[in-house]
Length: 348
Ligand SMILES: Nc1ncnc2c1ncn2[C@@H]1O[C@H](COP(=O)(O)OP(=O)(O)OP(=O)(O)O)[C@@H](O)[C@H]1O
Image (cartoon, rainbow, N blue to C red; front, side, top):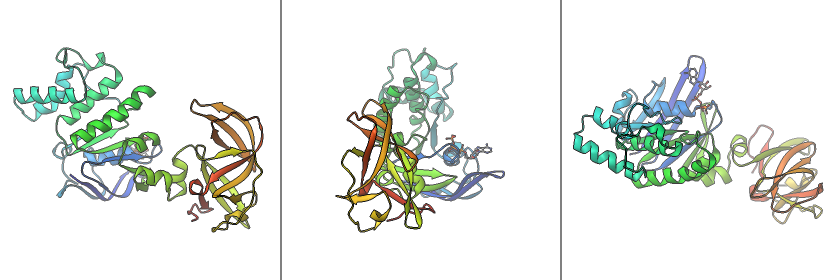
């Protein structure tokens, strides 16, 4: 079912939680909320779960207004960062708990618990004896997911569920969680501060800042077409350079992965936007170019990451080749150069 927030505000005393959030989570879709610490991600999730009352606005699950509906009657379930499994209960009892509360018969509980554990690929052997802490972190999170899914919720909420896991397990579980969500066809909302996680898992990404939605769209929209300076800076390994334009200053956001180092001297040719008149920045063959001093580099596995300096500003450029320190021309394809004026408005 489609889930909607309409103009939702929640404050904690004088402290801002979320403000005027309007958002639709499409039925069966995977939506990721991403943003820096304190931007209101968890507050939004908890408002949907019904863990706290909101100050104003409306929350709808399908046609139903659930704004004042208690948490347990909303049909939303949650997966937490720390799994929140009961250590004194077996895996079976952890997953069965919600079904027992809802007074399902013993045979229904047995069938549903085994079925859901099978689908999240937890071996059924010993599930009545073994406690969650005797499983790996990745398995514990899959058990927590099973516990949430077994209730066949209208909405699955996930609050940074992979943060406690090491990089390899995290990568695998990103794919697995996405596949499980698709196979259940469930509407999901996933909170993370990790942009790569949001981009790789979701159909729809919502970037939040200071309690508000900064930009929302497909992963490609928010990555390739940032509407605001903050969105441009938040995605990728981005760097913001201040560049003088006549008597005005502009901000160029470039990403390490999009820039190239070239030894050829920069050439100038006017472009439609007139940005080639920026001192030091030229436009040629669909690329902006400027000179930079390259000093140190790091090997990051997939590439070398060079620390470069232009007009006293430091940024990083990735390249496959190994370069000596020196002066290079940095080129950025026009469609990967994000320009903003001094007030942070996009310059088209
Ligand atoms: N119980 C609370 N009492 C007072 N202020 C709170 C409370 N919970 C959250 N806040 C404040 O509301 C704002 C949003 O917090 P929230 O936890 O939703 O952010 P977040 O994006 O989830 O952050 P993080 O990524 O660090 O978990 C923050 O400024 C926070 O300090």
